[in-house]
Image (cartoon, rainbow, N blue to C red; front, side, top):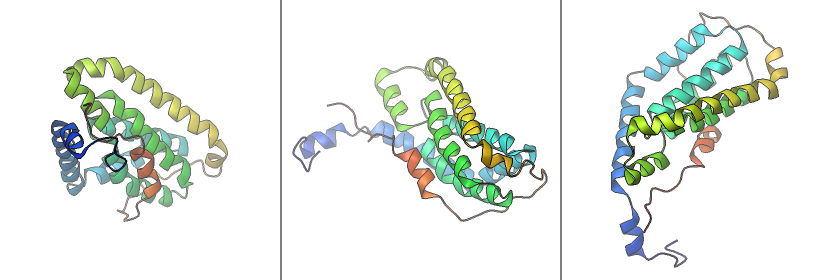
Length: 199
């Protein structure tokens, strides 16, 4: 906008919402410490230990991504969980596509439930002064309905993929993977808006 002359550099500088940036930084730091503490690896192993079929694994990936995105920032959840999901799915010899897409879309849907789920909600909370419980009471039902529709859609669309393998070894141990799917992270990042406030 500055390059095209729509906004002057001074207006662009004044439009930056530093409260939102600080909150976003804080959530990123919390996520980083959880990653260093191997929390996400533990969550992946827990999900895998309860999975008996591909559909169950898809359900747990959807719920884990949605719930964690509501508590942390959705972009961070995609970045942290993608290599873990890739490792789990490869060990189960299942198709990657439905699980990675479900991870990305569930992160977006789940993030709407709280004020800290994504930068847009943080901006809304800052300017509206709405309380955390009030915001969640209004949008948590929408997030739950969205996750239900999301899971049902991928079960139906990728039904033939699941028929290839209908069982997963429950006690299969998870090993950390360095593979990161940039496509899944991009799916979560694309809807995010710049952290600017109205001028």
